[in-house]
Length: 75
Image (cartoon, rainbow, N blue to C red; front, side, top):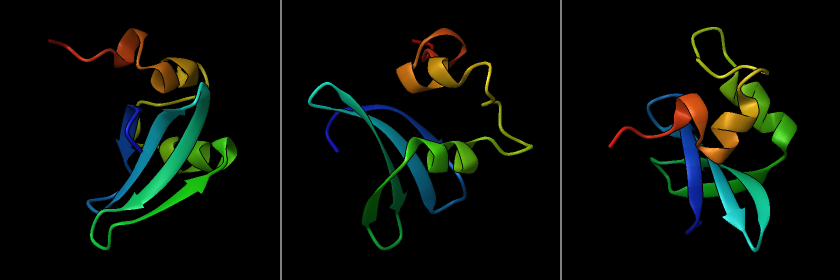
């Protein structure tokens, strides 16, 4: 995926990407050890990203997906 909006590391080798593909939001899970990428549903992405130790929750999910608000990168 070329147009990565944001990402969340589920573990040291599993990453969830929020991407923009031809104007549509797409979620991709990546196994960085093997290089395998698989498109997943938004619901599956929420399950992977909203863990007890994550700062991502239902209240800021849209901010996470658009990399805005709390999730804006500090430059």
